[in-house]
Image (cartoon, rainbow, N blue to C red; front, side):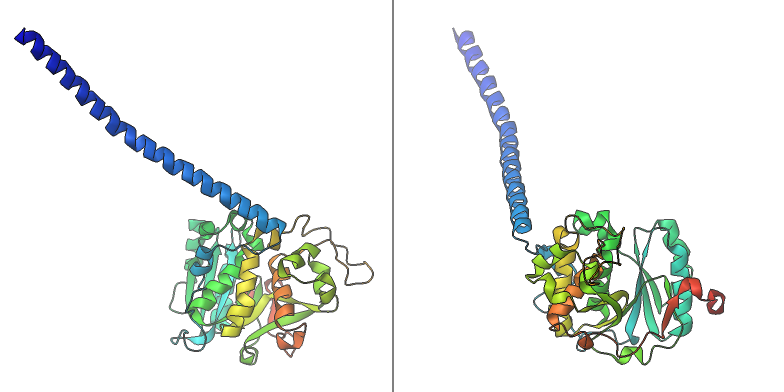
Length: 334
């Protein structure tokens, strides 16, 4: 009888032990299920928010992206917060895969023509081998190669950085240094820039085309403005531009520009393309069928910020400072 009782108690203990083990293993699975459910709910909410933003044409830049670029409660502003170990503005450019030779030429040219100014060459999607080749010519206190990681930004930036990365690079450099002369890598300095950099807080070169000629009409919706307001506003180029990180530039220019860049439907409206331009349309301010993406966005921002008066943000002289690399004897900068 005692033996029978012993086995009953033993069996009960074993069952109880396995029940405890089972429950212990079950709980994490249940908690994981709850977490996954909440994650899916959040994803659904974000998806619905994105749809709502697109439908209502709202800029939807994520706070974490803005913070990463220096849009904080207490931003670094010129002239209080800027680099003091070099002559400002610093000179920057952006390099993409396959443009290594342009970067090398850019480094040589700026060292020759603007040796007192620090140079940052931002590499976007350039291979390690390509970066190494550039570093041979840009690896001093006055010239640094910056490997710019776009994986932290929205997918449309990663998928087509040539339409979006320039604005991010400019903001990154502005936030660091306080003053930036951005020059596309295909350009070379052919004159000293003393006169050029006296312009503040912003300077761009004007074109003969209207903003509306190269801006998809749907972009205007994100800025709550009309296409008609821009019919007679000349477009400015963004392949050479000067910016000083004043409060005015930080809040009224860079913030809305970056917000548009980070909002896919703003920078790249449905139907936008960069080929098949028709500049023979009458009147000339009609949309040519070609959209200029980041350049279009900045032109809209500038027009609104300066009440459609381009004299407030353009250089008061013609460009005698830059030339295309293809038209310059680069051997003089060796």
